Length: 272
Length: 264
Image (tube, rainbow over the protein chains, first blue to last red):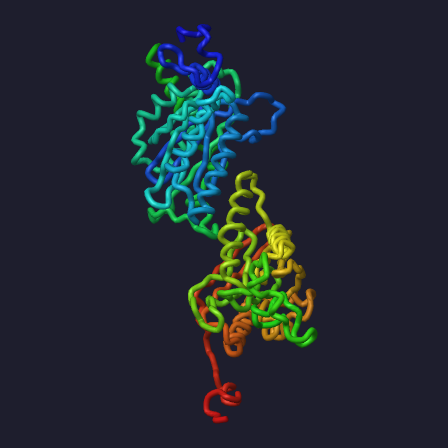
């Protein structure tokens, strides 16, 4: 950033002469310091995963979740400043809930992402506020149209994705995501890839010595292909944003370790 | 309880004399619901050893007109509870589709493996009902809450005034007159619940629904039943929908004045 210190970065919503908003760029920097978060839009559902760096051994395992449930059918994975993320999620919950009140149905993921993008964007317009130090991956299942995945950046930019990555290890994660045939793999396969990608993203960065916890959720489509989101909550498991069962995550992590370490062995063998 | 929902929430005519309708005439300011419009009739429920059975028919009446014949008046709320509603159907829809739905969604934000149990849902509902009556804008319903709570069957009632009570066998509306005696035959008190099997409970409830159809002019021959069964912390809820009344016998009708073969 060449124009740092020229005075155009001190107030939000002020352009620099070359047309940049530095506060927004700094917010993006804050995101890049956080643990990696990824989202996979698969054939029959969506997988969200984050690399949650363990700040202290005194923390209870599984605490300080970074993937939140917004509505039955939607989840948000965040990278960046956690308190900003909490506020962002709380806003998303209000949007989803008011949609239900007004339209008597679950909010389409595209509409939620759009509204959240607008919300983030308003925080780039005033000198009295700062932008969100958070990039959020919004994933869920639409009543019609199936799985849907979006990413909202501090600038308010909102794009739809097959595979989304943000946070410190996003480059490595993106490279891995691009290798996958995401529209044609199942969520079960997606979970395995997600575990592997988070492991690679973790290893590729300076946080390698730090331990991490893999947090993973999914929203699956029912086997018949239609996204039935039961009003009375009788269809448990399908059409819901929920944590991936522990045993499946553990297995995926084990497989990921084997796959990644296996690669290293191959390379060593090739070297020798 | 009077079997006509129109009369709920008012002083009893037989004790206090005919109701003076001037009190609720349209010229008075600030009126809310003073009588229900589209109504559902009885809900009946019975505890058994290991669960609760609850049933309600699928009719929504517009006065005495059988207006809607495919209305679900039982709602599963979370994983442990079924709520049944009689009285105003629009108030029921508000409670079921807005309030309870949002309650459960918000409860699942935490994602910590804890769920609202029947007792919690009942407590919530009774507070809503009392709050609304205190705003002089009651939700015109009688609600039965059936579920599994802390390893035991749960059954309790709340109404448009926020009144609360529980019991091993409960019924609302016409059922409070006609079904309760039948239910109490097999279940006179809480202790009797231990001797009632699931099959027995289902058949008693089926019998109640049949008798109610015979004698309640706001009922129909199609109903829904939910069976909540539990063991320790595990709960299973079975929903039976579109149950048709079986083995009806209208022989008794012959002896009813003004019906069938009799003239005069």
